[in-house]
Length: 370
View (tube, rainbow, N blue to C red):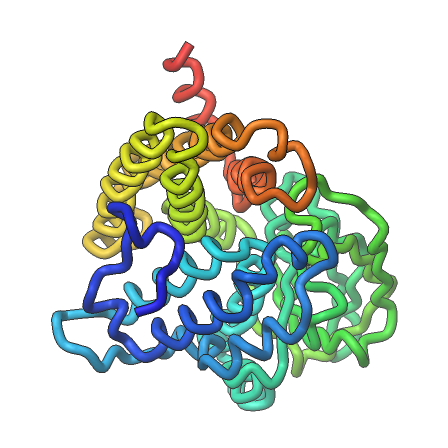
């Protein structure tokens, strides 16, 4: 088995999961191709070749993955492991990869059978790549609106963040109608008239993700390209319930941080190796609790416990990133050093898919630490 970040700690991959063909293929791609280029990728951006490498590994079809090994491994465990591994070796590639599945999930759940048949086969094979813009729909004044016109909709506004722009072939886009419904559509990035991207904004973390602000200037979407339409209040509730859960990518980040701390021991001092092992033990405990809540309880139940675990995981992630900088010293301040990158990426995880409930819990947690 190839060594991945965290393999010397309590965050190691479980034997049964590691033996699954999809996990083995993704680990091979991560260790042989994506991981070694991580610092170069952070400087120049995620290349399409990384996405193609994941296609060869079969990762784009993982939502429908059926485990073949013994030991009670579930499809959910395999999906989580893929996200953890990719986040550990190259968070920018992971985040571009993760955008794809909003459209895949939307199509799987959609009643628009023709649209599903049109797009889904190419998406799950990695022949077409997707991006997404919709989190802004929970804002009191959403920046993208839809007006019904004839047999379709006209979209106007500005998507503030769209990751993977320039790499993606198709986009999953949300808008709000005049009667406060959430509309979700498919847009062909090359064929849709009125899509104008501002790719000049600089990010101090995850700059490599090809994130752009995209304007929709009277973009017409026929009814045949609508994925879903329903009450925005229901979508907000479902979005908040989903994002009460700790994200696998944060545990991947913790793998990488703990691995760096353990390796830094001979130079920085044995206390940093001990710190890496201690953080890994705490991360493994939180991971087990987070995944147990997700597997045992129906969606929407145990929200307070889920949010508390997610907040504790993010707090540990931020502290682990800081520890990496301290252990590394001045080199961490230079672009191209993994410790500095891990510290910046930890801050990204604090705000990615953030909800008001999580923000409040993080505030309470930080107050208790004072």
